[in-house]
Length: 194
Image 1: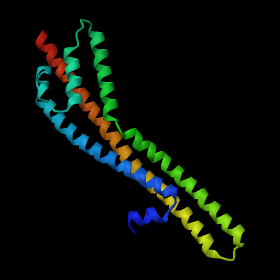
Image 2 (image 1 turned 90 degrees about the horizontal axis):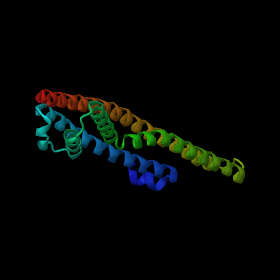
Image 3 (image 1 turned 180 degrees about the vertical axis):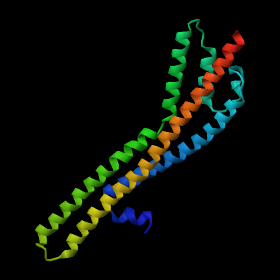
Image 4 (image 1 turned 135 degrees about the horizontal axis):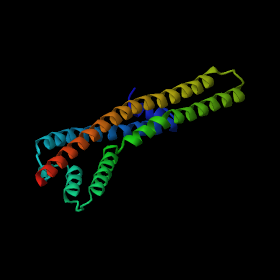
């Protein structure tokens, strides 16, 4: 059975869940690409010895963040460190892009499957009231709908939750690595001033 058959044979709940899974998979591929790109950027940051060398970084968001830190003009060390923390928080929001949406789909998919379950049970009861148990195929069709909707919701939820938790972990590690590299470059900048 392929996706086209599943699409044609099932109700709107399964169709919405298929679309949600497609959205999750697009976000997964984007995140994998961004992690690969960030890995190369973090390796490049290891080679850089000062904030003056950041023009060779290809990742525009990382380069802009480092340029703003480099160009920050204040004599207050407290204000400077607050600014750096804000920039790191903004980078964390950038790193978490799409992850919250994947988590939301992971949480809502079983609920949508449950709505499909209620609709399927409703159809079973309608069939029983119309034909009064004389045709078991009507009941079987409703039970099939119940099972497919429930399983579809759970499948999408499990896949989404695995990616959500995995990406959340990797993003947290990447933000910590980026923060460490920023502070290393700042220490080297301060050492040059002394």
